[in-house]
Length: 211
Image 1 (tube, rainbow, N blue to C red):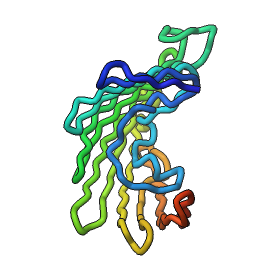
Image 2: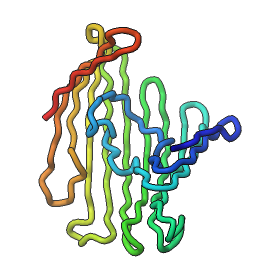
Image 3: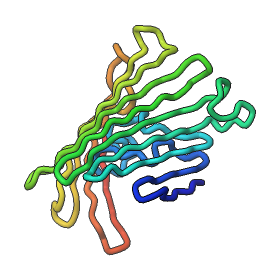
Image 4: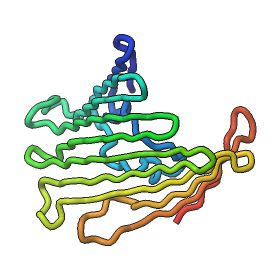
């Protein structure tokens, strides 16, 4: 459940329950996959989820520049919100989106316990050159304060290419890590291809093949 409303001409505010704290983030990505792995465009955890009370706000800086903030409480009525006992998540996002290219930086701090937290930072970008397919990339790194120094860093990346107007539809290819990879561990990669086309004004079909 959420309620979104404008606050002045340039600010948007969202208040909700069990809504992602990153709901108003702008991620620089134009890859339109239907899969639930590549659709985060590499910002796997910095686009943080919400499990309780959510408060978010965004501000339009004009000329394609955009910034946003998000907060998500743990939903525990005993420990409350923004307290030492409660588990909270906070996030920040800044982006530039234009017709030819865009870039965004996202950051999230997620409390795992009263003494431990994880921080996530993601850098995303896209490029849409005339006459060529669009290219979207994303890279995210994680630091876990409660893990051993040899395993406290994780990384996650994504590369997607999309061809517009291939016949009646859109063709896309992507590869990336399926999950965040802890330093020193082997990467588990995912590859996919999709083709999205409109059957009529009210229906679009998107076959997807992935490994």
